[in-house]
Length: 260
Image 1: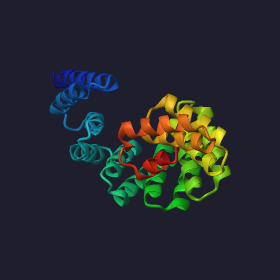
Image 2: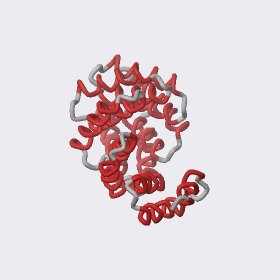
Image 3: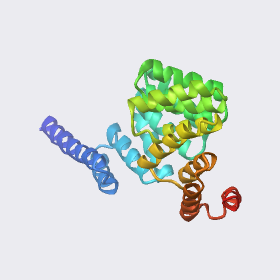
Image 4: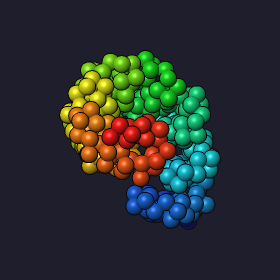
């Protein structure tokens, strides 16, 4: 009878946990949390429910509550690389960068093939302006998964900071080849080309970035290229668009408009 009771308890907690996971995939985070709570109320040692709840809280920007959940998960299963990664990701969002790096190091120590932990450690080091160390992390991520689009993109960003522009462009090109919707790669590639006075190529990249995601700065960058190409009416139009999208007080744009 005791075994049968345990079996039914396991079935119920698994059902709530599974439902929470499905709701999470549908971006229904509050409903997912309710399901994970049900599973946890039946079995407080169900690590995957704590992890799922923490992930849902992260999506809702409830970072402190998410950390509590990941700490619970880690206390149950300290040898699961993804749990350390998830905690590190939260700490990164809280700008606790050194603590985040410790978590990514734990994740990597458990699973040296955890490419996303290498990538996120690189992002954290990049934020701390430790560019060479960040570059090493991105190289590790790429060596594990050579079609990791974001690792190529992030490596390009480091090389751009180090003014290794051709190498950066090569990384952005690979990132775009893997993921044609990597809008940041188009934008940053355009900025390098603009710096190299390759204004037509820069313009093309800014337009590609804008097709994927509209931002005020991208309209400004497009206007800069048009300005250099002496397409003054078009440049003026896009500077005004950039102003309308939030750059109305931008002194640089105001100065550019005074020249048109």
